[in-house]
Image 1 (cartoon, rainbow, N blue to C red):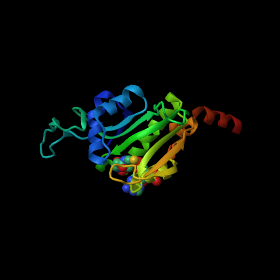
Image 2 (image 1 turned 90 degrees about the horizontal axis):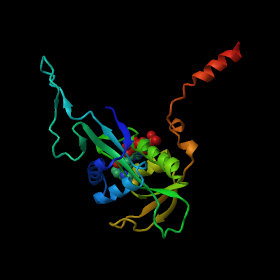
Image 3 (image 1 turned 135 degrees about the vertical axis):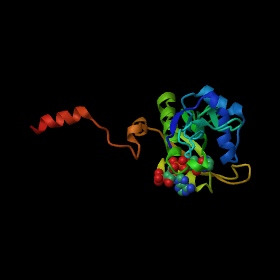
Image 4 (image 1 turned 180 degrees about the vertical axis):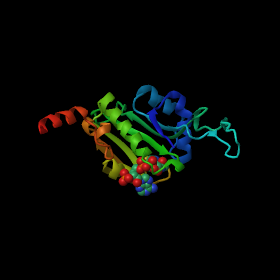
Length: 215
Ligand SMILES: CC(C)(COP(=O)(O)OP(=O)(O)OC[C@H]1O[C@@H](n2cnc3c(N)ncnc32)[C@H](O)[C@@H]1OP(=O)(O)O)[C@@H](O)C(=O)NCCC(=O)NCCS
């Protein structure tokens, strides 16, 4: 199953909202997704797959490829492209905010259940953090997470090295507390080549120079 991570577009917002409604109690109107994408177009990302709708009948001698009827399925943004996760991010733009340091905020993150534990959320987050730093010069990024959300806490604290700033009592509408988290952003650490699980770069020029030194 191939997954693509790409920038979110206005035409994705319904499918993003669908992924949100399926997975989180904190929901937003479509205009809030639109506000993010129009204001900070580089900051939000979606994970998509094209594996879903094309099907083959294994019992047929001559294979006929057909496309499943996807009408009414809000996950699809094209006849064969389905959104399976997103990271919605922005720059802090509250004129009354005390801290005037340019910084980003992750508003929402979600991966559809059957696509979890494959590193999709980590990749979506890393793309968003890189863009906030590179494009908008964010010096740090903040977010809130439910105290009970083990999966998200593992991702933020252990995988992405966010630190807990404080506990915000009854932050959520149902009364649950939130951890307020923050990560300092350094461009060189966020380069895709610096990712924890990145493969070693194949540096042809250095290999050739090493060969000369050895002789
Ligand atoms: C939280 C969520 C986005 C994680 O998505 P995901 O694509 O499964 O995460 P990844 O595969 O990128 O995993 C990242 C890390 O978190 C860990 N992790 C993921 N799910 C976990 C779980 N249920 N329990 C413990 N650790 C978990 C992974 O093992 C991985 O750790 P590693 O770097 O040590 O290997 C997903 O579970 C989700 O959409 N949950 C519902 C919505 C939500 O809670 N959003 C966050 C709101 S703040």
